[in-house]
Image (cartoon, rainbow, N blue to C red; front, top):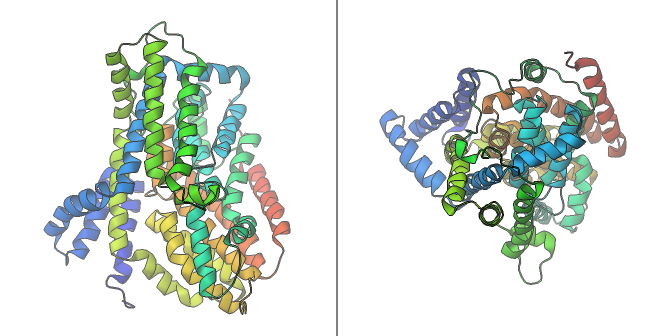
Length: 518
């Protein structure tokens, strides 16, 4: 098996989970069966031992006992509680009412959602949770499908955060770039190389362009068109028989006659953002390090948990002081919001467990090994992009994909471009290919935590979100490959390819997209 214990068998757990999830729409069952299949293989094909390990080893020990994983799960629960209190205060309804006065159409509401997502560039998790939860009541009012909301939220999360020079991604990316360049004896400032690679993040850029084009043109195609048609004609913002990843609880609904204020929602959210920004600096700060290094070195799961708890306390205090809530009523609304996230965090916990199985079976390393022989010549940026997409989609982790591929791709790119201690365009393009190809998995893999968070915050059925989003993700990826990484490998300048690829996307939407005619 090419030096790997499991080889191609490592494909079985994620493939089984993804296929079953799409076919049955039972995400939890599909994830459990995928984990069980992998655990059984690891346990020497003993299904009983594999079943026991599924829950004790992979779910409890590797998933829930991991500090990063449990931090993200606690963050999801606590921010759900914060949103529950804000809802109870009438703050969410007040925001919806205020936006409705300004956003006089579904288009302006969707555009506001996208712009809010771009502004929340500093962390993709915080981006998804805040934008989705804030805009969901407003998009519901305009009969915009939850599938479309979750697509917009997802398209302005990882694609944006991964390119932001001040974000929770930056240190990881800079560290991998610096290590890769050192391995080929190239002396270059990793931050400058990061900026040089941004124009080559074709998929990330084109994903944002496609989302904005769809919104502005008011067109959709594929399964998203059907979802939008259903929502506009019937008012059903999610499909009958599906399971939205949020549960409305009476404890988080405003009392009859409650008139909330925009500030009831804005103040806790502003507090959340401020605590996140300053918390990232505080948590990651080291003597002699700048803001960018501090943001990247921070443990985002810890900082986001701080922000969610302090935001929750702020919302509760507003309720007690301003709205004269009893402490019991405030806590009940917080618990109601927490309960609304239960389905989502169960799915997230099992997704983490599946990633643990995949990691132990060395799927990503095996995929790199079997495809490494074809990474050569002028097509190296294109092949790098394709391999990064496959690895990220199969494993559901962009950071893991970046960490595995970058140390391998940079030497290959240097070798085929005759770097000889210099930084060549092929190296820069290949760095961009790794970083943006990895985002593809984060953007649309059913087992990606960011994809799950987008479904969760938007109140969408997870598989419906994935099913409607993949055609759009595939469109952006195809244009990135054919009109981005392929020609750039043959020397076509990136300043020409970016507007050309964007124009192709606009034409695709114009001719394939359809408006909802009511």
